[in-house]
Length: 476
Image: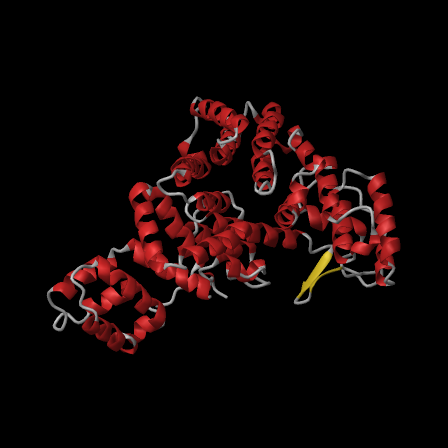
């Protein structure tokens, strides 16, 4: 699948990282990087946070897979441990395997275990292999390779260890070793799958380790994305910032990024007094820090947009709009809680469209009182809803008769009276309002007077467009 063919709904994107980036198993790292760069230019973090996160995760996972080649082999069925013996020469000696993993310019390290350890795998004795690797890990706790092998073994066969889950080895490895990108990238994927892992005490200890200073913003970002169901999010974010301050507080590159992440998340939590105080404190501190726009623009642009949208979303709970549930959906979407955001969005849209005329009135009121929120809702619905006009636009004659028949039968005196039947037409014929307007304009010699004017009204009717997209999303 080429990257240009990614579905409009991020939840329908492929799980396979290479398929997502549009590359193959043999693609060079340089070409993988180019594919990644092309996608993040299209899906920027400030406008497409969920899509950007998926793309970055896929890229990091591909790098992890490449680094693990000495230990696991990849096939269409998934990952399996490399099962070589000293005589088959698949990867050479343990020392050669270690050198291959660390690169040609890395300092030579002592090999992990002997070939007999891997012979256990060849005989199918996974439990003995797991016990042997755990023993080796105690003997050499500073070698990341041991934690990786234990993680992959327990991932493949969870019954080997009833006392822990596989991701615990990733946390242990990061706590005990120099920072290893393979461990970190796998941890990111696991935190996405198991949010409770991001709240574990061992994860919090990572934020206090000076040798992990360059990666503190990323670790915080992953952790705070797992807070959707946490009761005291503001308290935890403030505590995390206090943990990270001694480690990166003097770093003019990373500390503003930490503050920006905290401000962006706390902006949505200001109804809580503690979160509101922390938000004001960190925002004031962030404004006083000299920041290079070139270096920090991406992170801080997300912060600015998050603060602006959170402020605008507060009006949704007022008596004028009474759209409190939508505020929670916007928060979930913008703070990267993609799964609950989509689920709750679908439920909200279903209730909204139960009465189409009421839906039109509610969206008009929202557009008038909070255009920022309405624009974000349009972006969110558009990101999830399917594109319905790509093929039919090439065959306009298929729906031209229906469009002209509609306007022949419906001759209201005002555009407002036209909107509801026009919405029903669009949904029934599966053509967007924009396509209807283009159809009218394409027949200039036929369309005259009021219809020509209404083509412009239809083209610019954001309310009609979002309700049509919402209907298509629910139908899909």
